[in-house]
Length: 245
Image (cartoon, rainbow, N blue to C red; front, top):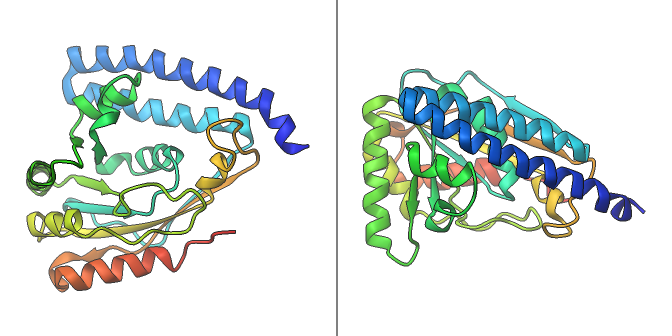
């Protein structure tokens, strides 16, 4: 019965979501052209706040728990498991003061209103997985940018989404590259739970009444660990808190 009800509600959700992307695409363009980075970022923050509100149409609830205060005025590597696209708006909104930049696949860089514009005009990078050397250089450049400006980089080391919440093994190249470029920074592990339930039927219909949870674990100082130790510790912290039911 719940799945049947979700069909008309999902139609309404997607209409509102699509309208949001179109309106804020124009807003980002105006913000970037006339006010540069700061103007663009304010619009992106508002976009992601609005997406969270649109998700309420589905009965989605949100918890964003920060276990300890996140270090300020230092570069940060935000490391999270990845379940669906819907993981991301909450991270952008709740951690907006950290100026999060993303490492995304190049396919997202065109054809998607608002999202493609943000990825191509913000500090984020779009990598081609078929060109690992080029991708590594892009990650190096992003790490150096974050280190110089005390900004944050968001990376999903699983490399792809987990469709049922079960974590996939971390890919270490990108993480270790960022560690090397940001030795004076911190790693901030985040565990995401229940996001996959929004798409348990695929993209349509959407799941109803999901409680999407983000848990931000205490930051880890990069210089206190070897890269391999840091990869292992970060993965264990994130995955041991994932609930797959």
